[in-house]
Length: 219
Image (cartoon, rainbow, N blue to C red):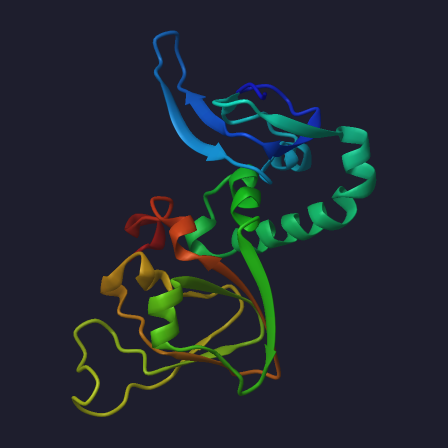
């Protein structure tokens, strides 16, 4: 359905069936490995159409599949002005945060697909420690400031063991919630909007699993 290294000529939407995403390393003796899959409702080619980069993996049908295609001209005329612009804006913001500064545009746009935009006002609770443990969300501050209540550095007294920890103020470009990937960060706290208007991006932690390491975070 799509070949690694080739340019996308159309947006592909999988109506039914299953596709395997298979990547091959450099060299004639390189092994192929399955790096993902696409199910009904999934798409292929939008990242490549937005960034101009070739397919990073081949898409191979592993069952009978029905694929709907939208050519590049129709994509540019109808989807790029809104869908594409928003994705690129999210990707550009994510690149300003330390976990993703070394990522390429295509990888960032792919990650931005899984992000959700949120806005709130001063004093509103964004999340609490219980929610963070259940929902495993990572928060990125796009604009405004956010107050983290009850944050304690690793090794500090826990709840009920001494004075309450001072609140931490998160500014634009800051992120919170990576303790769902690295429990030693000990981030359990309540997040509330600190400035009059706050804009956030949220990403499910499992989307980042295996993609962000301690060296990248400069721990």
